[in-house]
Image (cartoon, rainbow, N blue to C red; front, side):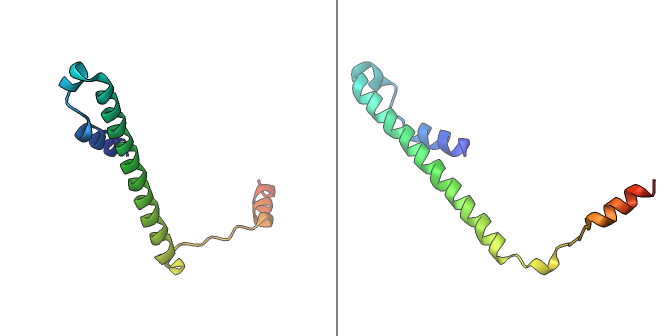
Amino acid sequence: MISVLTNVTNNNKPAHSLLKTAPLQYKSQMFDATLMGYHSAFWFAIAFALIGLCLTIFVTSGTGIHVKIDANDIQRKGDSK
């Protein structure tokens, strides 16, 4: 996500020459570029979350390994030592 933030910000930042000619305009455009980077990173994270949610919904529960541990079995094994 940091890469998305950095790439979008760097692609949208104003020219450095604007800093010398109109510093307030440069500040405004740089702020907008940074905000666009944050928005892109946020939506990128939302997309990953939705993909993860979809994967958890569609995974069947019958293929996993299920182990049932009983507290009494653990005590009996500990007593035998």
